[in-house]
Length: 100
Image: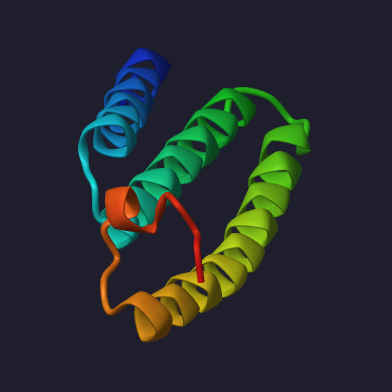
């Protein structure tokens, strides 16, 4: 049995990697993947905290986070594809002006 602290430490490391990816990268796709990594780290923390007891709140929260992540993936990828078709780049610095 793996201790709860190890799962929470892994969750913190994954979340930190996601934050670093969002802050340092310029590609919209890499930023998008970093946000997904942060959402999955939050899911791991929710499920870890819920595994110790009989309550299902952690799994329910994780389910809602997965639903939000799926909606974010659909909308976010649609926006990224539309910007790429229009600008021929996914670099956020070049897209920042949003002058069509």
